Length: 127
Figure (cartoon, rainbow, N blue to C red):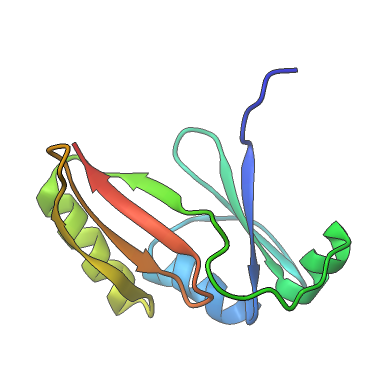
């Protein structure tokens, strides 16, 4: 079996709030929804799913009390710097927080970070 990522599941404190952030705020189309689960189909065939934090921790057999930087960021590639700026603005207007304002990178690109309502970090980057 080859290593691929079919879906990324985010543990969230408030499923309704996170659903609204991703669906209403960022425009992700809901593909499947249950009482404690929401799935969005993303471009490229992968999915982003949301699951209550305590339930997901139980599912994985770990303590749900983790905090701080989890050592993971999600990346969103944009066409150019103006698209980076526009998406960061959209995320902030939807209820996210700008973790790092967009700026030119040493390697020649342009990027910034936002955090969703549960603190999951997204890097928005353009070449």
